[in-house]
Length: 173
Image (tube, rainbow, N blue to C red; front, side):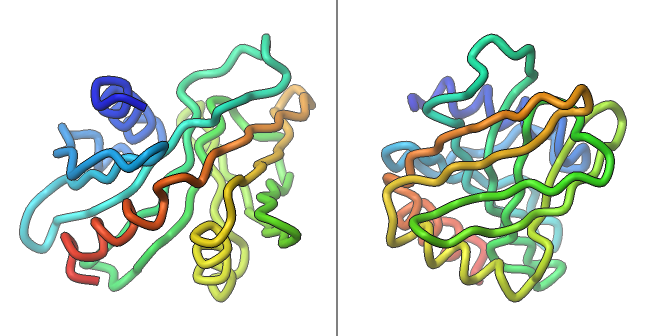
């Protein structure tokens, strides 16, 4: 992903996923398929990595910006919080799954202001997911749209370790 695409995607995804972070981010670097960014300053500083899927199925499904983020929130003392941005609203009460290697992780979904988002159900699984992402090459995320369409997004995990190391250093986490 080039820096122009990364910047556009990060602003688009953040505007959809986290309105409070929708200001202009600063790119810390692009590491293969992941980009490290920061936004805010001082106690409001937040750092995150973002990637877009290499493939999306069904290919012709109408979707807004799609991405997977992992965020460090120093003000909340929250390190490496994963989030799925599907580019659509989720089916109410549905679960999203992320598969990394042989491990599967469940995410709860929430629709807000016409957009969907998903966060890992068990906070204890956040570190386990990030560890699996660091040691595997691919992640597959599946979810159901409000219309009942199953989407499958495949992410490359190339560069995720370096991108995470960069944001952890930047946000001192």
